[in-house]
Amino acid sequence: MKLTVLGPGCWGLTLAWLMNDNFDDITIWGRDADISEDLAINKHCSKPLEVQLDKRVIVTSDLKEAIKDADIILSVVATSGVRPVCEQLKTAEINPNIPLVNASKGLELNSLMRMSEVIKDVLPEQKIVILSGPTLAKEVLMGKPTAASVACEDIETAEFVQKAMTVPNRFRLYTNNDVIGVELGGSLKNVIAIASGFAHEMELGDNCMGSLLTRGMAEIVRLSIKLGANPSTLYGLSGMGDLIATCSSPMSRNYTVGSLLGKGKKINDILSELGSVAEGVKTSKAVCDLAKKLDIEVPISNAIYEAVYTDITPAEVLSKLMNRKLKKEENYDKVCG
Image (tube, rainbow, N blue to C red; front, side, top):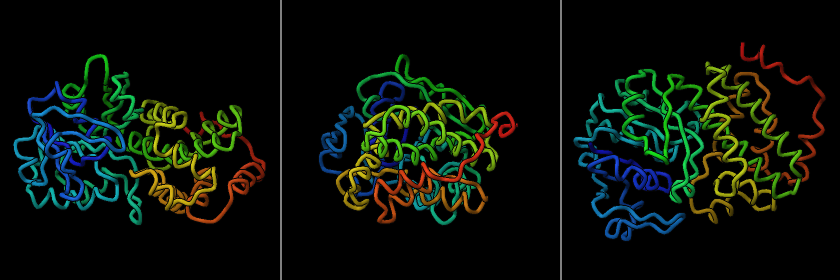
């Protein structure tokens, strides 16, 4: 069995490391600019996390060679890179029968498409699987256990990926055929994670955190159901599970972005300091655009969008959220019905 990982970023390298004993061959593909000498020669990466890969892992910038004879192709590129990479896969004549597993969480700006929609737009015949759940890379590298969802409209394909990528005692996968719900849960929670880091930095307390997660989940549910998600999916691993993990851990890049915003830092300085992608930053804009298009209220996401893209102060963000017009709490039996 051969696994090809597209994207030598933090999560891509972590998954390659995690899958070491599951596959006979592992190849990592990236652009020349994204492959350091240390990674190419020593199979080692030190930033933003330290990852030491097995010596047999192949690191290459030759996409056609990377996907040759692959049994599973795992895409872990930034959401902004998914479309161009798919265009390259098309040119490289990817086998449409090979599962292309997307692990990137976010929405494409302008089109507002989910990643599976972007992939299908370029590769309409491809078998597409979505991997999403509470998967903080640093904890995975520490050998701590977690679980995630693999979603595909074809459940047999999801089951194939589930069996191939489950790692005993460390990485447990569950199948799901609700691609929309799994994708949106994993994408939208990144924005709430920024809000969580923001609130923690401002020392707003545990009551606030409980309220934030609850109201944040309300936004995720409201928007996702409107787009066709199964409500139960949103309370599963890729929804509630991922939300809890990323909203309560400084290991989350989106949480860290929120924390630095709470200190009054500007987004360009934050991203430069972070040195890696935090998908919630761009997703905040996509969510607000999508909510406006669907005529849905997403006050937390709107507040984070302002915190990221305008000069609003942390105190003003809090005031806008806390002093909104009073309203009735949703009846989720009706919302989910």
